[in-house]
Length: 160
Image (cartoon, rainbow, N blue to C red; front, side, top):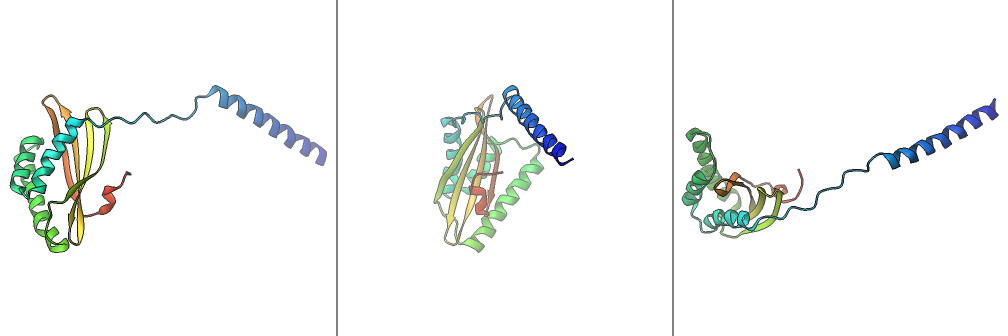
C-alpha cells in the first residue's frame, strides 16, 4: 500500500509538471505595460498659465480663468467651486502661514495623448498645498478638466 501511494504521488507530480509546462507554452504571458505616453508640451503650457496666476497671487483672475476654461454644468456648481476656493484662501493661511508664490511642478503624466495630469506644490512657511490639474485636449485645444487642491502631501506621490 505504501508503494502504491508513493507511485501515485510520483506519477501525479510528473503529470502536473508536464501539463504546467505545456500550458505555459500555449497560453499568452502576462500583459506588458504600454510604453509611457509623452506629456504634450501644450498641455504643460496651459497648466503653467493657470499656475502663473497662483504664483502672482491673482486669485480672482485664477478663478475667473477657470470659469472660462473648465466646463461647469451649472452656475450653481461654479459657485460651489468658488466658495470652496475662498475657504482654501482663508483656512490654509491660518494653518500653514501666508500663501506663497513658490509653486513648483513635481510630477506630470499622460493617460492618453489627450489627457494629462500635472501636480504642483505650493509652499507655505509651515506646510504645503498640493495642486492637481487634469488637462484635456478638446476641439478648442487644451483646457482644465479638473482642478483640485489638498493639504495632504500624499497626493504629491504616484499611486492610486
